[in-house]
Image (tube, rainbow, N blue to C red; front, side, top):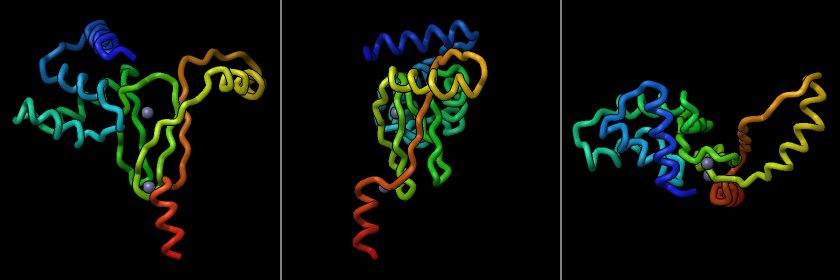
Length: 153
Ligand SMILES: [Zn+2]
Ligand SMILES: [Zn+2]
């Protein structure tokens, strides 16, 4: 997706929701919308400090929580109980390693999901429901951790 388009989209949503747009906030949005590796607040903080050495980790947490509440970032929790953030809010799933916490994007076919939904979910809800977005989380071992486990036994 076009990064500037995505950035403008978030900025528009923030203004519409009545939040002010400080340079620090814009920098956080830029970092999260450009990131491809599902960073933690700590990761974002490290990057941000290159621009704003005085900024606190708490400010980063607050801004990411605000963006999550506006549905502009996705929160992903690992088994290690750390929270990662995804600036890519297009429909996709995540394969999460239970051992090292690595998060891998998984492409999902929108039509498959909608077919599944129509066939199984709407029936059990006994009413029709309109999907806006969805997340799929798969837990297991990444290839590196799986290999290590095999050699350890
Ligand atoms: Zn792993
Ligand atoms: Zn993702």
